[in-house]
Figure 1 (cartoon, rainbow, N blue to C red):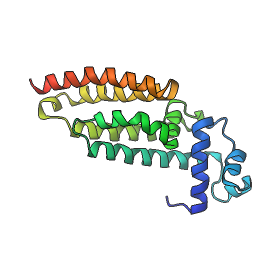
Figure 2: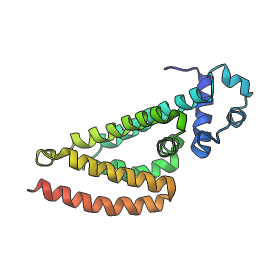
Figure 3: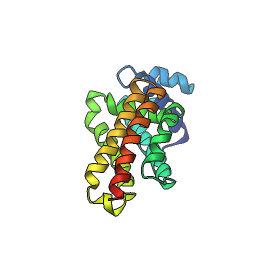
Figure 4: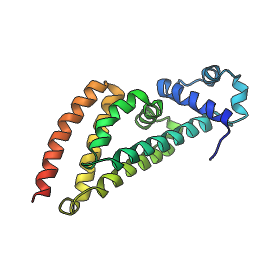
Length: 188
């Protein structure tokens, strides 16, 4: 859905606000103040808080999906570039912070929609990873893809609940073991 530049400013402010406060504590008044408008103006673009939240969530899934595409397009070892760059991305991207907060702490009334959107995001990560597997490994692609997504989830959780330092330590350890196993399998 294409939205006006005014509505986009509201969505951008909503992403920042919801990334920090979540849906339940999110305030349309605060979002309006962040844009320099009255709360009533939000309603001329979005029928309610849920619609604004879902527009912000949809954009976050799309933008972070594009980041995944970019990482995998320059990947020499399937999946390593995304894992190496996701901590920095978390610091720089309110959309990723919003996406992860929403995926792991979804608003109850929007849980199904959020799970579906985050599932699409993870399916994109999975598809990219699987497409880079060698023929020897692809025989057990589901096993390897699930293990890789386990690393992705672990890093995402550390970013959300701990710190970039903790996420990097987790990534380093898990990638070392995963990559060594993957290489061993590829060599037969």
